[in-house]
Image (cartoon, rainbow, N blue to C red):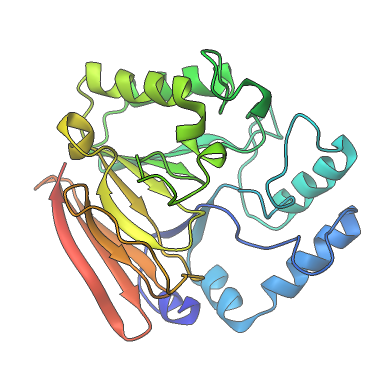
Length: 285
């Protein structure tokens, strides 16, 4: 699939994290070990083809560091090694004043603005479930709300490594995604609703199935969409999700193709699998 995606004439490729599993087999701990994990992943033919074909827009999730790692307790030296390896293996423009910062935005004319979040390294699990729950830092939250409100792009892609949608109980570990930090989730979604911001799309990963549907089951949140992109490692036991909220669930390995038309204000979402197109639908901004 990576080689097939590389053959398409796309403007860029968005990856929501777990791009490399540094905790597969023996866990990487030192900088040299993290570099070795990247070298193994990067030398595969599909990965080489994709990386050489287009620009990459990326954030990280847990497996770039360690499975389900906790920023409040994780060893600082090991995190520094993982972060250095992350930047060494990606052609990203670093923030001049905060070079270790992952979150950033990219503007594609008046068509698209992409907001790349870091929902891993700033979370505080000790606050989960409280009114002060922190999934992203106050600085990142302020930046995101300000940029969303000031954006003049027709489409606004918010790239988050874990989903923000309401999923039925038992679908995923709620302690690991936005729903586990409901105070910030509600703050952000309420902000978008109250300011009636149009064209906001959530692009996420982490779960081992693909889907497209509303962030919530009813009302304005049903009209705000999230695409659980891909993944290349789909579990064939993908869950059944309520059709009233989710337009499609994808249970085979795939990647997601977006075509944005700013004149018609239409976004076409396609899931491409090993044998071709699985699903395609055009949505209004």
